[in-house]
Image (cartoon, rainbow over all chains, first blue to last red; front, side, top):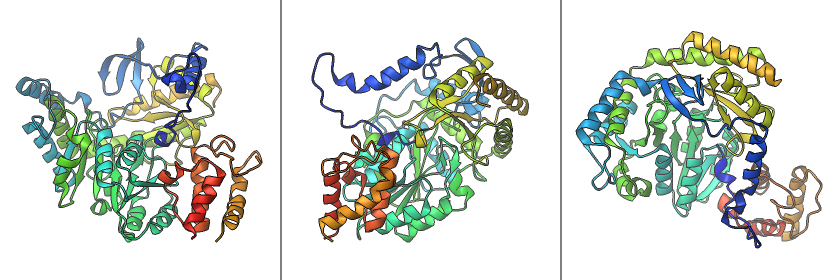
Length: 416
Length: 79
């Protein structure tokens, strides 16, 4: 996502009646009103009244198949995960009411960090209250004034915000362009600190990065490497460690950033690393220090889920089957997809424009299917996308049902 | 390299990005007059970086609003 660079951070000074600090949002308000005035159901105001399973919910009153969550491994209703959460809620209460560095570290937080260290085979793990804060905190803390951050232009908002917060020199390069990255690293003044920030899976189009080649280039220039594996954890790689594991270059990654809000099935974020001085981060990283730690029930569900994901190879195999079938089926129906081959659990369907994208989204919802509508500025190249994210708990039959829904909705809206 | 030569070389680079053929002077703005969006900015900056073998970080880009600002910033790197 590249919304970080599109923010209107310098609003024009405006004088006159009816104008205030909210005037900068007038264009967006008008665009939304225009869209909704046609009777279009609001794609950004959906309510799930009841959640039946990782793949089904009652949305706006309808029984709906969920194809737009990040519940890749379907852990949210896992019996052991639920039991661990209930037990922790009973034993430790509803929240910690404190920072990790004061009264907010319980044995559950340490157990969760132990589970992460084992999951990744790394020496250090640090749990944050959200994945957003993990990127914000680590990037802004390690790359400060005078250092250089070289990053992919399609990086997630949390990465851009971490760059902005740390005051480092920020140098973006074209998405997945190894040569462009190489050139920029080569031009950084001698002696300056260098951090390369990459993602394993880019969440908008569901494409992966050529991490092996890119990390080799970064190391050639003496840069440290941070890889966000939010959308690959639990699914990609032999042990579910992500794209870097899959491409055999995890040992060369200095920092892996991840989240509990996708495959792990709860909320929270983390960084794992083998850096010998890593533990000092706990004292100097402001988004870690100046916020309350995760509730005990959340870290208990996360730790249980992470340990189960270590042994999830059968689920991983089924999720790949689902992703491949959906990709092949949608291609066959004539939809244009974000990648030629399925590369992750995300299949992005490219819409001709926002109006028809929103119409297609609504037609699918009426069929009983929920997908994500993604629009600029969150999307690359100003695309409107219907993002489908699969779950290991979707049955093969459900994937066929989904394809039927896409066919009917696509014809009704005139896209295929 | 003097300022006039930098100006001439950037003028050659901007041509394909200046879709409406807007006349460019010192005060022409990229966001306003030339209507560059963030992706156009990235491609345009990359082309300048390659031409002059320099880095123009996003922090520096934030200070560059007009054509004159840009030519000044690049000229500075060449001396």
